[in-house]
Amino acid sequence: MSILEDLNALCAGLEIPVETGVFSDEAPDAYIVITPLSDTFDLHADNAPGVDVQEARLSLYVKGSYTALKNRLVRLLLQNGFTVTGRMYNGYETDTGYHHYTVDAAQYYETEE
Image 1 (cartoon, rainbow, N blue to C red):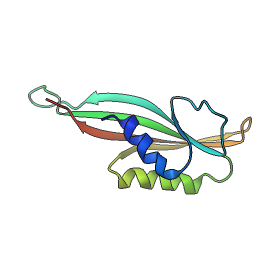
Image 2: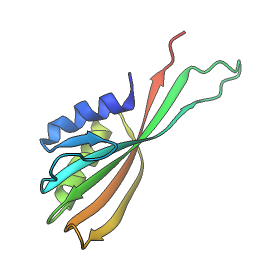
Image 3: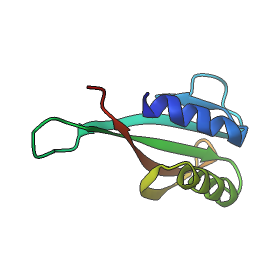
Image 4: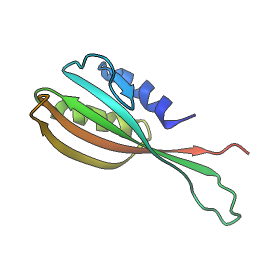
Protein backbone atom coordinates (compact mmCIF):
# COMPACT_ATOMS: atom_id res chain seq x y z
CA MET A 1 0.00 0.00 0.00
CA SER A 2 1.09 3.55 -0.61
CA ILE A 3 -0.30 6.93 0.24
CA LEU A 4 -0.42 7.88 -3.44
CA GLU A 5 -2.68 4.92 -4.27
CA ASP A 6 -4.90 5.63 -1.28
CA LEU A 7 -5.19 9.36 -1.97
CA ASN A 8 -5.96 8.86 -5.66
CA ALA A 9 -8.74 6.42 -4.78
CA LEU A 10 -10.08 8.70 -2.05
CA CYS A 11 -10.05 11.87 -4.17
CA ALA A 12 -11.97 10.10 -6.95
CA GLY A 13 -15.01 10.61 -4.72
CA LEU A 14 -14.68 14.39 -5.11
CA GLU A 15 -15.45 14.01 -8.83
CA ILE A 16 -12.68 16.36 -9.99
CA PRO A 17 -9.52 15.39 -11.89
CA VAL A 18 -6.55 14.20 -9.81
CA GLU A 19 -2.99 13.64 -11.00
CA THR A 20 0.31 12.87 -9.32
CA GLY A 21 3.26 15.26 -9.61
CA VAL A 22 1.96 17.59 -12.31
CA PHE A 23 -1.35 18.13 -14.09
CA SER A 24 -0.69 17.22 -17.71
CA ASP A 25 -4.11 17.65 -19.35
CA GLU A 26 -5.87 20.89 -20.14
CA ALA A 27 -6.71 22.30 -16.72
CA PRO A 28 -10.40 22.36 -15.74
CA ASP A 29 -11.93 24.83 -13.28
CA ALA A 30 -10.92 22.63 -10.34
CA TYR A 31 -8.29 19.90 -9.96
CA ILE A 32 -5.89 18.34 -7.47
CA VAL A 33 -2.20 17.52 -7.85
CA ILE A 34 -0.75 15.04 -5.33
CA THR A 35 2.97 15.26 -4.56
CA PRO A 36 4.76 12.76 -2.30
CA LEU A 37 6.65 14.47 0.55
CA SER A 38 8.25 11.85 2.76
CA ASP A 39 8.51 8.19 3.75
CA THR A 40 9.88 7.52 7.22
CA PHE A 41 10.03 4.70 9.73
CA ASP A 42 9.04 5.35 13.33
CA LEU A 43 11.75 4.32 15.77
CA HIS A 44 11.11 1.38 18.07
CA ALA A 45 12.99 -0.02 21.06
CA ASP A 46 14.33 -2.96 19.04
CA ASN A 47 15.33 -0.67 16.11
CA ALA A 48 13.04 -2.69 13.82
CA PRO A 49 10.56 -0.42 12.09
CA GLY A 50 6.97 -1.47 12.56
CA VAL A 51 5.30 1.55 11.01
CA ASP A 52 5.97 3.27 7.69
CA VAL A 53 4.78 6.90 7.83
CA GLN A 54 4.07 8.34 4.39
CA GLU A 55 3.17 11.98 3.75
CA ALA A 56 1.92 13.75 0.64
CA ARG A 57 0.77 17.23 -0.36
CA LEU A 58 -2.56 17.74 -2.08
CA SER A 59 -2.52 20.97 -4.08
CA LEU A 60 -6.03 22.14 -4.80
CA TYR A 61 -6.50 24.55 -7.70
CA VAL A 62 -9.91 26.19 -8.09
CA LYS A 63 -11.27 29.02 -10.21
CA GLY A 64 -13.88 30.82 -8.12
CA SER A 65 -14.61 30.01 -4.49
CA TYR A 66 -12.38 27.21 -3.18
CA THR A 67 -13.66 26.97 0.41
CA ALA A 68 -16.43 24.39 -0.07
CA LEU A 69 -14.16 22.02 -1.99
CA LYS A 70 -11.32 22.54 0.50
CA ASN A 71 -13.66 21.70 3.38
CA ARG A 72 -14.91 18.56 1.59
CA LEU A 73 -11.33 17.44 0.95
CA VAL A 74 -10.21 17.92 4.56
CA ARG A 75 -13.34 16.23 5.92
CA LEU A 76 -12.85 13.29 3.52
CA LEU A 77 -9.24 12.84 4.65
CA LEU A 78 -10.11 12.92 8.34
CA GLN A 79 -13.09 10.56 7.94
CA ASN A 80 -10.81 8.03 6.24
CA GLY A 81 -8.10 7.90 8.89
CA PHE A 82 -5.55 10.31 7.42
CA THR A 83 -3.69 12.74 9.65
CA VAL A 84 -3.83 16.29 8.30
CA THR A 85 -0.41 17.73 9.11
CA GLY A 86 -0.79 21.12 7.45
CA ARG A 87 -3.15 23.40 5.54
CA MET A 88 -2.22 26.60 3.74
CA TYR A 89 -3.71 29.09 1.33
CA ASN A 90 -0.91 29.76 -1.15
CA GLY A 91 -2.66 32.63 -2.86
CA TYR A 92 -4.47 33.64 -5.99
CA GLU A 93 -2.51 33.10 -9.18
CA THR A 94 -3.28 36.12 -11.33
CA ASP A 95 -1.73 34.61 -14.46
CA THR A 96 -3.97 31.49 -14.34
CA GLY A 97 -7.00 32.65 -12.35
CA TYR A 98 -6.72 29.82 -9.81
CA HIS A 99 -6.84 29.91 -6.04
CA HIS A 100 -4.13 27.56 -4.76
CA TYR A 101 -4.66 25.76 -1.46
CA THR A 102 -2.53 22.92 -0.07
CA VAL A 103 -3.34 20.17 2.39
CA ASP A 104 -0.57 17.94 3.74
CA ALA A 105 -1.70 14.49 4.83
CA ALA A 106 0.04 11.54 6.48
CA GLN A 107 -0.91 7.89 6.68
CA TYR A 108 0.61 5.13 8.78
CA TYR A 109 1.22 1.70 7.26
CA GLU A 110 2.37 -1.37 9.17
CA THR A 111 5.58 -2.74 7.72
CA GLU A 112 5.65 -6.32 6.54
CA GLU A 113 7.96 -8.60 8.44
